[in-house]
Image (cartoon, rainbow, N blue to C red; front, top):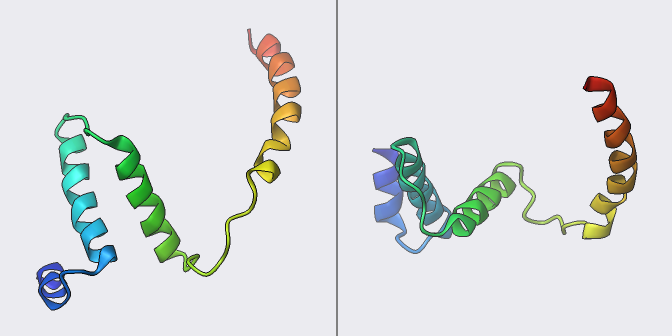
Length: 85
């Protein structure tokens, strides 16, 4: 009921549209169907998470910061896999 009220109050609000589309897409996935545009689905999820965490005003960090860990992880991964086998 609350969702219907919000849709009727402001049909152009992007967050409400995202929420309705996420509900529909997740019901498709739960039923065993695949999505035509999974990237759009992922973008909606990211926007809703940012909204929930109030990250709209914070700029994203450069991608270089996340790649700094890759070489160390790759070196450790090879030796860890050998130990497991």
